[in-house]
Image 1 (tube, rainbow, N blue to C red):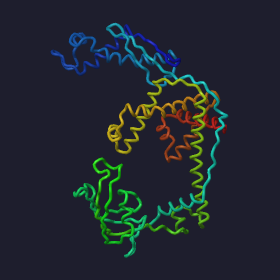
Image 2 (image 1 turned 135 degrees about the vertical axis):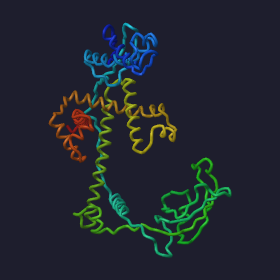
Image 3 (image 1 turned 90 degrees about the vertical axis):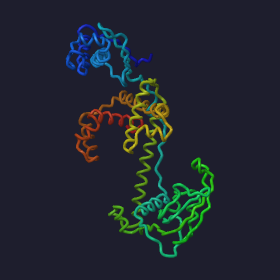
Image 4 (image 1 turned 45 degrees about the vertical axis):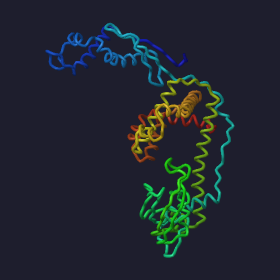
Length: 417
């Protein structure tokens, strides 16, 4: 048995157990109708004669557990890190013996966590990246215009088409459309379809003889298909000119020249890259420091973390209008598979958490009330809410303190403190 596993028995007897049984009787009797008595008014001895004393045991145990659990925590002076296991060893009319199995934080032995010799990358921004980013910004403000009469379809244009697909001499289900806007080069349709429209003009018609790819649906893969296509209209994206109007559209009131825009874009790319580099560097430091430490993780702690992750995933699905059962259905996943799939990430999270907590303990990192209050105010301001609303969302100021403590521990591991 691991050192952080504590098994304790507690016996509930005498008046305390009698009260638990009496409370259980009052609870169950409310919904019971016994001949000769109004609903909920039968005496206890009559109730027991009809249903047996055993019918009260489960509710009586439920009533006893909370007090027993609270008393044990006070006596043992421990903080369980996951839900305790409960076994009912004995239950009868005279007594109830409960066995609690508590899991406390696992023992952590730190290895080297400061001088990790991990090289941090330097952000570099090329002229090509700047040009690509500016083109992306232009695309955001591009106008869609109808091309002049006589113009031909080019890569990047949007063709408004009528089309009808035929497979094995029959009209393809879902393969027909009218005035469908198709961006050429978007790879929305099967290979060859979009390329086959390049060079066509408005009102032109064309027959495309194609084949469904190998990775298509089972009933259609590798099958020949014919599409009759008519071009109704051709539209193209017109990029805005790089001038002062464009700078204002981007919100850059202080930018007057293309060179100044390039400098702004360079700063933005550099900032993004630095954030990515920092995240990667922190991850590498934590991974190395956790490799250097010794920790024996209980299965119960791992299961608890996995269940927390699955719950978070369920909440994300809800935001997309889905539930976990629907996800299992279309992904071919189930609870057991997901549990197994999440093990590596859950193990990593647990290691990082206990690493940082141990570093904070060894380095004697303390966070004052004033520091936590200031952080809460800054966060509330950034989110545009009151400090009270923020603390309600977080749970308490202690959570803010914990977050600050963990961040300070990360800075020590990085070697910046």
